[in-house]
Each structure stands twice: as C-alpha cells, then as structure tokens.
Length: 181
Image (cartoon, rainbow, N blue to C red; front, side, top):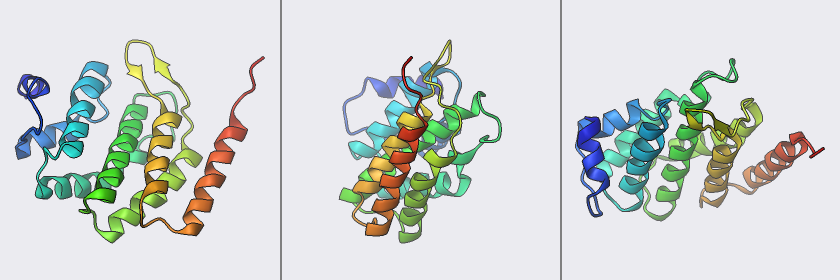
C-alpha cells in the first residue's frame, strides 16, 4: 500500500482515493517514520481535503473515524514518547477538517463542536513540547496544536465565549514559555 500511495504523490490534483488507501492513511497518521508520516500520510491527507480529492463520503468517513478515535489525546500520560506524533498529526488533520468544513460544510454540528472543544483543551493538556526529535522528525505539539486552535477560531460556528477561551489558551501557553537565558 505504501508504494501505491507514493505513486499518488506525483499525480496531478485532484487525486482519487479508494477506501483502503483512506484507511491506511489514518492507520499511519502517527507513524514514527517521518518519511511516512510527514511526506506521505500528511501530504496526501492535506491534498485529499484541500484539492477535493476525497469524495464527500470519504471526507465524512475520515472525520467520523478521527473523531471517534480521539487520538488527539492518545498517550498524554507519558511525555517524550512516540505517541506525540499521533497527537500532533491528528491535530493537523483536525485543522484540515475544520478549514475544509468552513468553506464546504460536511461535518456534523456535534463533530464541529467536538473539534472546537478539543482545540481549546489540547494546548492545555499537551506536555510534550519537543520540536525536532532526532531520527523521527518534527513532533511540534505546540505548533500543530496552535494550527488546530487557529482553525477552530476561524470556523464560522465558534462562539464568542469560545473565542475568548482561545485567547486565554494562547496566553496560558505563552506564559509557560521559558525566557531565553
């Protein structure tokens, strides 16, 4: 399947995906191999959503599975492990889901509110602040969580109260940053 998907990378947009390809991409969203995770899985998921490569049914299925699995919070109890890649790349996928839904609605109201709630919570509970992890690539918990929060803040269904919460979350993250010595 990996080789099949690598061939898609060189194809022109919009790409077309089958069910097995979609499932494989989701199964490998947090792969510790940066080549698979960044260059294959994330690239194809982003292209599939942003260039309408996924059908409406596929977008809905991806959103449903991703929301039900709640991988944004997988392994939070153990910082500095490979589960950070699952969390952070799920955050990026959540950002794509919200961004796509903002212009071409496909998420249910419950999914939208779940992702907005998660965006507000994630940066408050993520404890792995590593950037680059040798051999495995970019973890970027705070950066990718910020992408999710920005997508939530830009979604037309966010409330004024939730926007205020988002600002509070940003202030909290900034307050936790260590000053340069």
